[in-house]
Length: 320
Image: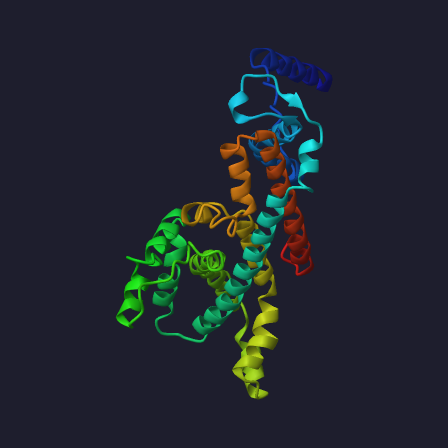
């Protein structure tokens, strides 16, 4: 009897399976953490390779030829490493490099010192801090070209605001800053400091806000003054932000072009000739595109070396 019942249940089960066949389960495709990260990063890497690496490789390839901008449709003459060898014998390039190094060191140093002083002052005030931050950040919002035009008219020796104020005090007009081989480069540094010191203030002030109040209270109990607190507590605590500011400002000032192009065009003579302006002039004024490509690669290599140095320091500080 039991055997008959088992046979009947098996037969009924087979009938149900024939009438209602089971659908196969779909296997869900899942990614673990590492695979998901690679899947999200690969499209961005591909876009970067398409927009940056390919033009870079093509620029390196073009720097190996001797060709001019007006000879686009003609066959380019092979130059090999002659354009790179010319870098070591170009006197105008040496002048541009010296001007650029002087501009970078002077501007970044003044911006860092002034930014630290203003950020410390903002940190010590409570009332009106938001309004002060808004006013300080105004120069950074203006584009560099508009900033250059603004300072060009401010320092105009005849009609500028500075010249008019000097006339009120008995002077015979203003000083021709942009026409002086001695004052032109410091004038460019003044414009850069005025526009980009707010960026330094913003970053350093944000770093100061992350310092715990207990450190200041302990230093005050020990009798430390404001200068001692700023030097022994604030500055070591914001050192990663200081390195970050140095990284961005050094890279940006080294590639200076728009401000000097609007204000001085590299003059008078070559007093404000920077490496960025010299590269532009070589390619589009002298139409020596092969050598201009080599100059561009030099700028890229120099920025990469400077950046790697700061990035190593940032890793030591634990920022990266």
